[in-house]
Image (cartoon, rainbow over all chains, first blue to last red):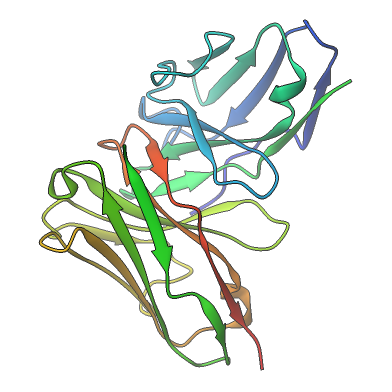
Length: 110
Length: 118
């Protein structure tokens, strides 16, 4: 069960847009539309931000959007705000009927 | 409102056992798959196991297969994780989460810390 690949860190200024990539294989990200993204602030439980590649749960800001191309999924945060500073994890269902997470990306708001 | 509350964490010696519980409320527990996810100190998230709504479908991460057992009691709205043969590398905060039909883990508990150390 190999982990997905994410950049260790991404930064941006308030108001800018940033994109976090999540690369897997045809056995996970590329093979299913069951990609999800989670936001985690220090000391807190993760929060679901995107499910099924591009859907936002009720209550999640429309500044967060998701997409997928081939084996790579992406999370874009538009209009970056100070409160968006957190760790972000992608996850995918796999051909082994398990889940796999990425290593996480630390987002810094400059 | 949906609430998940984990309990049962603590300090255990290598080779020991521990049973975690997750009490669910605010939704029809028996309708949903449930998962356990862990996070070692300062590290990322690692999926551990999930169980189907009826308990008939169960999967584990390779790192815990043969040592951990997930179960549920729908009458008690509770999820469990029996952890045996614990190792230092099992030290982590363990979260239970509601599984939104493979689409994502839409509600999480606050986590319970398991420390494996002599």
